[in-house]
Length: 117
Length: 109
Image (cartoon, rainbow over all chains, first blue to last red; front, side, top):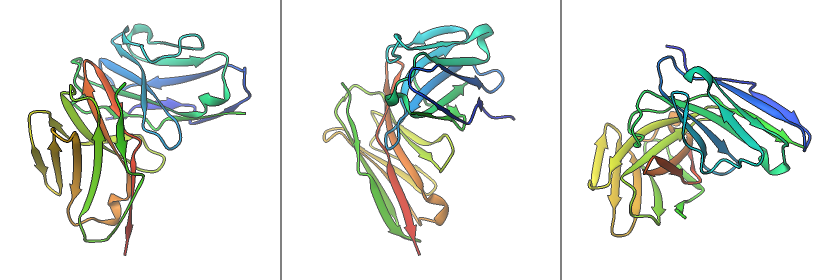
């Protein structure tokens, strides 16, 4: 079974530029998450999709971040414009379940490391 | 908001037991988790415990939950070099999950 795919793996941009990340979850997984992991910290949940609908985006900085999951499969996360504090690893995860618990396994992708100069 | 605290580092000798601790502030969480993150990889769910349980054992892993003190621990028996990683505790409730900052476990020969 293929895992969660993310691209690019690394990205370096200057502040005020735009950037987009792509995630392809495991086939058949209804729920998809984007996390931001700043160096030395745990992942912070940014947004949760169930199929192609947003379940929770309360921690997404909507003035600069946007995400979509067209057709309920792939997802993109965009930052426009980027700030220095956006430097982090952006993790995508998916799981089969749709409940509010996380007891069924979330499968994480390898992440995209973003550096904003 | 919810606060989840972990010590940053733990060093143990190969073959000894490792105990990784976590404290939290919000007692309304329904599930508590331990994740493992190896270098350059995403997180892997190791185990979880429901909030009405005190202990859960899964092979070399033992999770202890003290709800009164809001303290969660993960014990790894017979620690091996492959256990070197960052370990995160996490709590969930109402469709949200919050992670601690992680404990880096290093194994010495």
